[in-house]
Amino acid sequence: MVTIRGDDIMSRARRPVFGLAFLAALFLFYGSGATRAQTVAEPYQLSLVREGDLVALGGSVPSEAVREAVLAAIRAAAADTSVIDMTAVAEGAPAGFAPAAAFAAGLAARLKPGAVLLSGTAIHVEGRPDGLAGQAAVSAALAALPEGFRLQRQALSPPLVRPFLLSVARSGEGLVLSGAIASAEGKAALVAFAGSLGLGPVTDRLVVAAGAPDAFDQLAASRFALTQMTRLATGTASIADRTLTMEGQAADRAGFVAVHLALRAASLPAGLTLAGATISAPVIAPYGWFAEKQPEGVRLQGYVPTAAARAEIRAAAEALFAPLAVTEAQELAAGAPQGFVAAAVAAMGKLVLLERGRATLQDSHLSVTGQVASPTAALAARAAIEGSAPFGFTVAHGITAPAIAAPASAVPVVAAPVATPSPAACTGQIAQEMAAGGIVFQFGREVMRPESQARLRRIAALMAQCPTVRFSVEGHTDSDGNPAQNVDLSHRRAQAVVALLVRQGVEASRLLSEGHGASRPLVANDSPANKARNRRIEIIPR
Image (cartoon, rainbow, N blue to C red; front, side):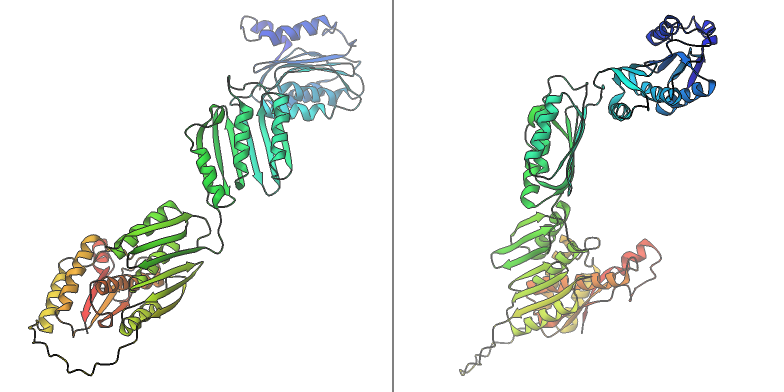
């Protein structure tokens, strides 16, 4: 803050920086009869006039200490202003004048433009508060006048607010309306509308202000924002000029859908435009999801945490169950347990082992129920499900199979022997197929790439040529990440391979899946290339 004393004015007179405030201060200073030659002022007056970033002081102060207190009060309220000080030290101040002078200084610094006059024990105030913060400070000051002083004249215009901002906030304690509104009538109507919504107590912090955009129905826009609050458990909406920003937590699924439909309408009411909206899905407990497999296709249904998770789960289903059609009714909701997406993909990997059935996730519990073609397949499916629960989840199952029919009494027809490759030749061809490219998965998942699925279909055909050979399908990872999660991932990848082979006609009893994590590296995990070699699937005859 720059302060110019009265003695400095003549040396600066050629600089046209003083304007209206300077002239008003000089008028009061010389017109009041208070000059620097006087020792007693009558009437005792102090004026503070603000114009732009300049405050002019005129009249009398009882001491240098009071003058410094006035300057300090201006500095505290508006540090970037400059001050022209034309005050004179004079006697005759009424009791309590020193705190009243500091009060007047702080009040004047909150006006832009404006003036405050202390005349005896009377206070005169006129002007425009400097924005919403200035309005709040002026209102608080005028509600607590200095002791012994009275407000004789008040002529305040609404503050000028740009951007013209109105906010609505909803919490468990009700609604809070704050910011700027164009008229007292509009304020009363909006508070009444908010109270009619039944969302709890309404706290009114609205300030009537100038600066609203032309040809804009702020009341209609604010009612629209309040209507969206009825669909949220908590949230805020801000209207800055003609743009709306919203965020919050949906109260339920219906509210989540309704608020998104309203905000994404072709045109919002009152000429509003949507600047941004972040509406979280409702929190669901218990958190349920399932995948159901039938001969005609696979259905995914329940809650997923994000749109990206929904797309990832569907893509995994299409890869795992091809050529079956996949349909879905997955809805967004918060509350998913940690590792939900990986658990959903793992659940579908277990469902692949069944002819028909359902894999259900409820919070952190997986349940797999359904039917398989034979008791042998049931044993294999149960072993696979029990052997690898998704990381952090518990697992249960109910697998059924048709009973084995009694042998027929008729004399069996002996089929002519069919020439088949020797087991060694068969397993050698499988090893060559694996060496040609191996089985490649999506990063951190058990979803195979299309070229790997094609390779496994060729391997299944080779396995059919040596039906007496059993195989161990072993999954391995590199050393990156959590060891327990690596074991879980390697096991799930091995199960995914077994599931695809079974779908291609390989008897489940011939296949054993194992996951070793990073415990059996081919080479040291000391480079990206070596780590890639250690991430592998091995199909080993046993």
